[in-house]
Image (cartoon, rainbow, N blue to C red; front, side, top):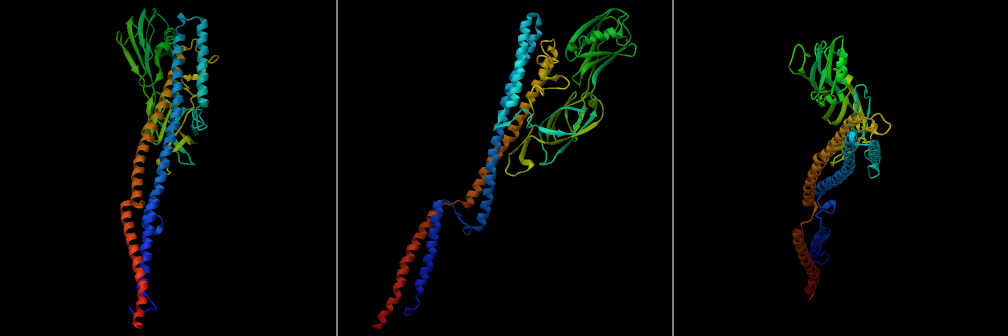
Length: 470
């Protein structure tokens, strides 16, 4: 080398040193942060993919937290419902005990009535105080709100779950396609001799004996005196027609008459005749609902509900519409905010004014001074009401449990798997491979040291020109 103004080898060594030291710094940064991508220039496309996956990871983690919170809410409500269920069982026992009046004093009956009043108060207290995070759960404040419901057609609408567009409402069309019917038998004429018959209904069987020539009206009266025991009522039609009806609607209801002696049924003397009722046929938003008499259960078309048809509506082919306008509790279970990733639940009131139904009566009517006060010879009516309340609470608990098990917990399992897979994908893109980085660091260190040594040699090259000057 005979030129000294420009030291090209030194410039080349400086350039390589800058590159090698930059690589060394990058390897040190990756090893210290654990990340392969620390800034956009490290891998622009990888950064975009990584940030997208990180966003998804955050959403999935929050969805899992939401799901756990939803389980906590349901568990709190279920615990309160379990306590109410226990109280209702106690109530049932007290009613049966009061019915045993032959073995009780008036003081004991009164004491049992006071205990019934206390249980009813406890149920209302649970309804008003069960809460999660300061929010009431079972007082009806988190139930769905409805509008335009025809009380002449539908009674006691209980909405357990429904999909309602945010800020909007949803129409529910209820169509009766088959009328509900009672079981019915008709007889004509009067007894021409003493007659004994056995009548059976859904509640039980009894035997009645009528003297020769007993008027149709007296026969009807005798049957009606036992309707609480048999589930059969009688009416006189015209001058000499006797019609026996089941007291309830549906295919489980029946009327059976069996002559034991005499000539009560001329056309079928000595034979047993019977008739069964018929459930209403109901479509809810075009979907076939499950019906028991006049009680409708629907779990389709994005709605989970139970309601009752009034007698006038359920025995005619007709339709009605009501709107779900809001309410309920919405739980966001998925990473994307839309209805498919949400579960909406309606927390119905379990107060004594809401347990029961309009046909049988409500639980609060069993208290002292009310229409079905148990100590005032209303044990049968009380048992029917309590049985309905027990069924309501059991259905309520079952549906909450179904949502928890089949929707929330399965969703959590799915989201947990998704979280693992997405996290693994993001890690593969962004995280540093320590084996690779340590090897690259060692290489960068060696190259940097070698370049520094070469730079020192390059700097000394111009001084060799002095040897030419002798």
